[in-house]
Length: 257
Ligand SMILES: Nc1ncnc2c1ncn2[C@@H]1O[C@H](COP(=O)(O)OP(=O)(O)OP(=O)(O)O)[C@@H](O)[C@H]1O
Image (cartoon, rainbow, N blue to C red; front, side, top):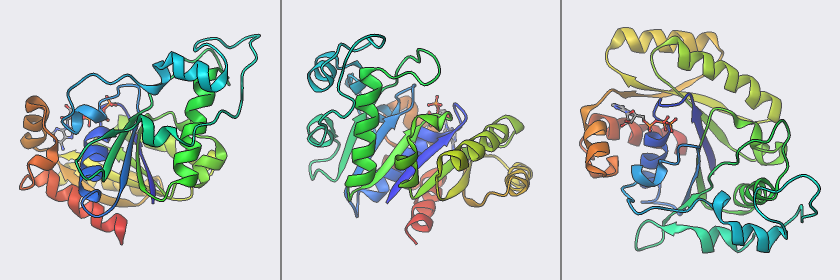
């Protein structure tokens, strides 16, 4: 199953992605893919050593596409680079059993609308391979601007979760994502409301999401333990008794059912 997690900056995409990846990896093989410009997924899993994102692996990009990273205009490079070995060779094993692997994609500095550069060609091909060819669970932590998923890749995403927090700004972003998602052919969308402090906030967000014609598949409370995990550099999965972890475990069950 392929799940993309998106939403406005700071709403909790990475917390949800990392925790879902940990929970699902207890039963399935999971690839967690960080495609968010902030690239925090590794630290949300408690991985502290610096990781070079694939978008910055100049030698690899040159070897596979035949062109320098960053070049675009007037240079000839392969539009269909070989990448089938890369998901395995570039991923970081999170656990000893190899059930959870992490890939940090990085992002491309956009050179204008429809920029085609060797690095973006490689990342897109890699994303296509992971989403279309792999049997593993894929959890994709991505930014709100989801246009860079090609149509074919988007159609193979089983579920896109939009994370929303109580407040109009993240709801407006959700509306924009809904439009983009339908433009590129994402088959199923659902929302998770995060950082909920009380019933009034939950009712507010639920009502607004309903007005957008979207379904809510879970609510995560604002929880001090999430902040504690972040400060201590631990994954939230280390705090299985926390209210936030339990809510995400429930969301995992809903996704699986
Ligand atoms: N349920 C929660 N309760 C309390 N704090 C939370 C909760 N969820 C997330 N946070 C905190 O909010 C901040 C942003 O969370 P996170 O990094 O998961 O969001 P994001 O959407 O991935 O952000 P970005 O867009 O910057 O990548 C973090 O400091 C995190 O610890």
